[in-house]
Image: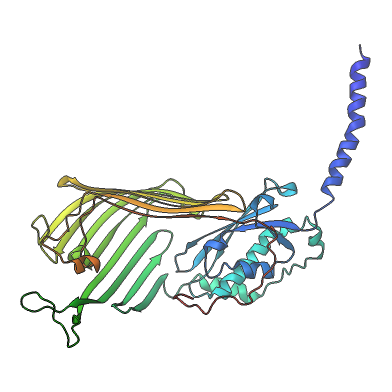
Amino acid sequence: MRKTPLLLVLIIFSLTPYAISQTLIGNTTPPNKLRVFIDGCERRDGGCDMDFIRTEITAVDFYRDNQLADVFVLINNNESGGGGRQYQLIFIGQQNLHAGRTDTLYVNNKQTDTDFEVREKLTRYIKLGLAPYVAKTKAGEIVDINMKTSPSVLEDTELEMVDPWDYWVFNIGSDANIELEELSRDINFGADINVNRITDDWKINISGRINERLRTTVQKEPRVDGNGNPVLDENGNPIIDEVESDFDVSEFGFGHQLVKSISPQWSYGYDLDGRQNTRFNYQFQVSFRPAIEYNFYPESEQNSRFLRLNYGIEVRNNTYVEETIYGANQETRALQSLRASLGLTQRWGNLQVGYRFRNYLDDFSFWTTGLNISAEVRVTGNFSFYVRAEGNYVKDQIYLASGDFTEQDILSGRVTLPSAYTIDTRFGFNYRFGSNLNNFVNQRFFGRANFVGND
C-alpha cells in the first residue's frame, strides 16, 4: 500500500523538470518584434499624428487589427487649465508575455506648444511606455535608449511653477464665410473671445460671441399689369423681373461660469448668460443658473470615464422682437433643470451620452426633455461603426412670435416654426480587409489642393 504514493511522487518529480524546461524555453525565445495597436489618434487632430509616430518608432510592428496586437495603446485627451491638452496613454498587454500588464502615462502640453512640439513630446512618451515591452523582443537587443537630460530642462520645469499670468488664458478669434450662387448669396461673419482660469479648486470662464448672417435671394417673377395680366415685350414674350429679398439674421451672446470644487466628486457654481437671437425671437435674453454637480468618478479618471449629475434653478428675463403667441413682449420666468452626462473611452471604442430635463416652475405644462448619444464602437480591428443622434421632445416654445410670416421668412430661417420634437442623427460603419501591417508612410500626391467645390 505504501508503494503507490511513492510511485506517484517519483512520477511527478520525473515530469516536473521537463515542464520547467519547456516553460523556460518558451520564455527565453522572444518574438522578433512587438505587435502594437494604437487607438485615439484617428479621432484627434494636431499633435497626435500616426504618420509621424510610425516614422519615428520602427522597432515595433503597427497592426490594424487590435485583436492581433501584443500591446493595445489607448490615447485619451482633455483640455488642461492653461489651454493646452493632457494626453493619457494607457498601455494594455494582451498576449504572450505581456498579458495582464497595464501601464499609464500622462503627457502635459502648454497652450503655446505647436503641433510639431506636441507630436514630438507625445511620441517620446509612447517610446517610453513601449520600452519595457520592446525589451522582451529580439528588436530590443539593437534599440538604443538615450537616458541623458539637460539641466536646463529641470530649470525650465521649476520656472513654470511660478506662472506670471496666474493661470489666466485669453483667446480671441474671428471668421467669415461668403457663398455665392446665381440666385442667392450668403455672407456670414463673426468674432469671439474667451477668457478662462482653471485650477484644481476653481474654474472661471468668460466668453462672448457675435455673428451676423446677411442673405439675399433673387426670385424671377413675370411682370403683370394692373389687371393681373402678363406684360409682353416687342416679341410677344412675357417680361421676367428679378426681385431681390434681403434678410438679416443676427446673433450675439456672452457667458460667464464660475465653479468651485468641494471634493474630488462634488462641486457647485453658476452660469450667467445673455444672448440676442432674432431667429428665436429674442431681442435679448439674460439668464442666471446656480447649480450643484456630482461626479460618480473622481476627476483623476475623467480621461477614461465620467458620470455627472447636475441640478440647477434658472431665472430668465426675455425681451422679444415681436409679441409671442402668448401675448408677451417681455417676461421673467424661473425653471429647473437636471442634466446627466456619461463618457467612456475604452479599448472597444468611446461612448458619450447626455440627458436633459427642464420645466418652468410657474407652469409645469411647459417642459422639454432630450437625449443625445455619440458612440464609436470597434467590433474587431477591421470593422467599426459610429452613431451620433440627438432627440428632444419640446413643450416649452414660449418664445414663438405671433402673426403671419411669408414663405421667404420661413425658407431663410429668419423665424422658428412650432415643433413638438427635434431629431438629428448621423451613423455609419467602416470595414477594412487586407494586410494588417501598418508600418509604412507614403504622402505622395496627398490632398487635392483643398478645393471645396466639386472636383
